Length: 134
Length: 181
Image (cartoon, rainbow over all chains, first blue to last red):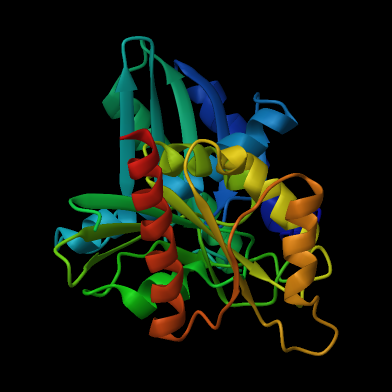
């Protein structure tokens, strides 16, 4: 097994700060992982390294399957997925035009306000996107 | 002959040709979940499967086969379990030119129940490449573990080669049905 690819240090640093800001300003956020489309952790918050690696792989599979379903249904581009349960929410969002392609997975408690979570996660994605385009 | 609809899972390490094999035999263009591959050290190719591949073939005898392909990397192990659930049979693809092909053989055979849950057929590609392991090495490795699984040399770009693997699996299923009948 290889250790996996490395992603730009500056962009990863920006992403890490953005994840921290997201958790601090958005009530209910438990953890978050920024992941590559092929399932590697790029940055993570409050999940531990094994948890982050697993979440990154699962998030990328979800993202890829979401995109395939969107294509099949003719709605073309999957931008986000929301998994809800009685005890929490997982949101997986694409980072627009990032090179390499990236997604953000955020885990939140059930008492989060979904609209607020989506809005904050979206803003986080936009800022991260800028860092990965430069 | 076997009747009805079967779920067959194509598995094996990254770059073994799972997506290509399904595309070679599927009646319709398969659903794929290819994404940009960032790990060029593990395998130097542009795209890799992150979710699953899905295709479908109708056979001449009325049987239909649903074809699922897994991602190859160990970090996607959870998808192996999801896709392997309720599979009638497994087609394990390996690349004989990879130095760790026999280790991969063991790992995937074990991950998919060592042929005890559902039959496994092994397809070995690139056996003619320079420095590649001979086909016998794969059969011997299985034998040394007390396993007898069919092993074929295949070029997964060739429809007939992939169909040979599927046909063999269907024959094994039919034999299994007769034994339990």
